[in-house]
Image 1 (spheres, one colour):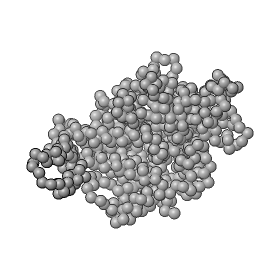
Image 2: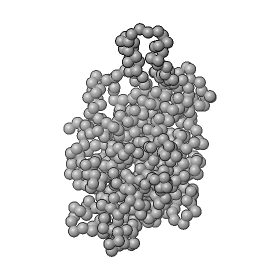
Image 3: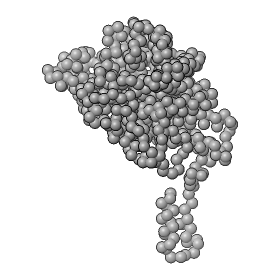
Image 4: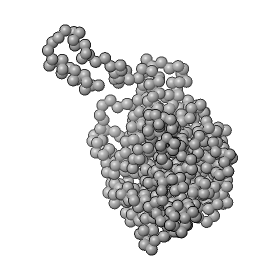
Length: 571
């Protein structure tokens, strides 16, 4: 719009004078002309700013544009996920290529600050004197959502980067002197934000996807746990224990408060079908939201097939495309095609490591609903007529070790793996409309009660209550009808039991980098060295870290205030 006005001004100097009526066609009469002063004239416009944040978070989780750095956000390069042979160039565990100049770090960092900027703008506009609110409660809820988003962003930044600059006002001029806080201060800011708005969020809503009180309480459980872990690392034992007590307190509010509960019986849109179990039900269409009767959904991103068809091409979960295996390459003599019998149109942008797919289910851990074929599908019948396994299950020994060449077998194993019910379905929506088996059109979880339970378990263990931690883990294992229940003796000091249980329960749900880095010490690097699929990690990860580096471009741009680099990365 600004360029249009400049063009008109220049034109008025150059043209011959004429009568006013002749010149009217040059007078621009915009229906709307937004400036900083008038962009927000109603509460509805402020809500649209909040909707933009919901939309940004949906795209960050679902990754409809298939951005490489978001696959890292969802776990690529951790103990749980690696890349298949056809995508070795997208590896995120070759530390010969990973340094503060890596664009992934800057994308993480800048994305959370973009979200903070939107939240700050919504908070600023909510206080404009000309904004009319239908009630004080309407304004309070708008402010609560914006402050939640700001706290959520700082929680993520604190877990990944440690102390970062705290920005609470919209920026109107360039600034080059931002100051880093400490990790503790970053966590504390987010905690204070959520404490301030906890009771302004409703307990439940009629509309799926909108923030509720349980989402704030879950994040307070995680933030106090993160705060206590960092304080313990700084040898502030009394303060750390106080933080763990608060983490347990907020975990109790969610877990024992009467609003949420683990689903233990078949429910929802496919409950009457003979196949399936209650864990499988959690990931079927029309089953995800609390409003659908799913009492363990605390907060969910919203996907709408009608909107996808009409106007919003990003309203999809491209999981069957991005996460599913490529049997047609890895086991081409036995399995081919892109139909549901091979998990959909998989191109495997990232793949589960052997740890995620097999090791966590070894031995006494095998008897587990989450390891059943309907949930984590392992039986694939040969569909190549010339195969000796045509119409019969193809053995994993054949897919994993079907060649006399060890390198070929390594490559094939990276392309062939079990298919989670979270990333594929036997009933794809939209096939009659020309859709293929790339996308799911169901809602998906930001927060599920299972994660709150595991956070509380960790807080209990860190406070010395290993028996209580084991009891919490067993809440999930009982629901999954596991044959083995953990005991206090299983709760090891490296938190392997909790991390393994998170992998079983939250595969394709949790952001694993946040979990590993939040835990501090050498937990992240030790597990990456041990479980990464390709040998580059063990060969090149020659230093320890428990934070990602501050992006070098951020350090260089902040020219008027030195920003210290995180330990291990200033080499």
